[in-house]
Length: 179
Image (tube, rainbow, N blue to C red; front, side, top):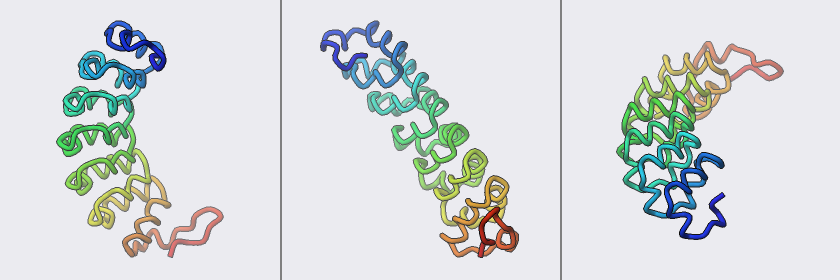
């Protein structure tokens, strides 16, 4: 990889592109600051490994196309996006559809958006813990979580002291009923 490459090699776009292609997007961390701002190189890196977004320039962390490519590959790459894109519904939906738990990195407004939360819960049951308190107690969201996993509803019942009669009467295999 580029870790031990001379500084001059880390400044050559073709060398860094070849390293990204061969060893993955994480090689971006060893690229020169100038190349971390090279849009095509960063796109190649995040398409290979979404989390490579953390090594991109601040300008590219605010580039919607780059961030969409990153979160499509790895939902929790959302944590490295600009605040504006963490508040962009299209970007956050793309992230939570790929990895529901990425909801934790969304803006407060989107963690309170029913469509976003339902998409997150449909992908990963534990995403419910990152929803706003109001949606964590919302009947439709709870039913969606119940359909995905009884454990997700149990988390909400404990956290919000919400009583859902259907959930309380269900028995989990090998465990006591929820109460």
